[in-house]
Image (tube, rainbow, N blue to C red; front, side):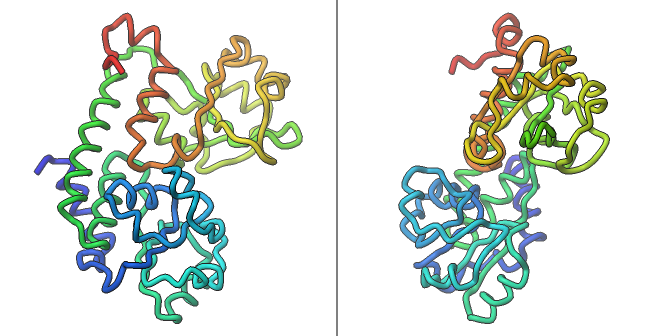
Length: 293
C-alpha cells in the first residue's frame, strides 16, 4: 500500500472507530457535506441517497435530491422528513443539539473528520467506503485520487518565486473578509504552490486597509458565486488599499467555483491543477511542467 494511503487508512480508523463496520442499513442515506456527497457518487453508490445539504451541488444529479438545509444549521425535522436509515455527517456540521435529536430518533450517523489536506481527502474516502460496506471500491478510488493529487502538486514543485495570494471571502460595505491560516482556502493555496498573503490570524476576518497593503498580494483569489456575498472585480479594485497592492495594480483576480475550489473531495486534484495554472501558467509552460491537459 502506498505510504499516503496507509496514513489515510490509519487516520480513518483512529478518527472514526465505528466506521470500520458498515451501517446496518444504508439503503436510504442522507449525506451532509458536499465532499461526502461527491464521494458517495464517485464510489458508485449514489442510488442510496435520499437527501443532501445545500453545500452538495455536484455532481449535477445531486441537485435532484431533497435539499435538507445548510450543514451548519440543520433542522432535525427536515433531515427526518427524508426517512433516512443512515446519516453521513461531515465534521463541523450541526448544531450539536440537532445531531443529538437525530441520534435519539434512532438514525445511525457517523461524523467524518474534515482535514484540508491530501491525506485528509483519502481518509474521507476510506471512511465513506467503510460506512457503506465498499472498502475495495474506496481503496481503488483513493489510489486514483492519490496519484492525481501527486501529479497536481508536482506542477509547482520547482517554482522558485511563489506568488502571494489573498483569498477574499466577501466584500461587505467596503470591508474585505479574507482568509488567514487553518482554512480550506489556506490549504488549497499551498497545494497549488502559492503562499497565503495573510498569516497573522486563523480563520476569516475583516482586514483593515493597512493589513491589506501589508499583505502585498500578487493575486486575489475568490469564489465565483452570486448572492449577498458577491462582489464584482470592479467593486474589489475600487478599494484604495487593494489598488496599492501588486494584485490591484495589475488587476490580477482569479475566480473558481467555491465547492470545486474548497471542497477537498474527488475533484480537488483538478482544482489544484487549475489554480496552479492560473497562478503560474506561463512559467509552467516555459519550464515544461504542464501535463498536457
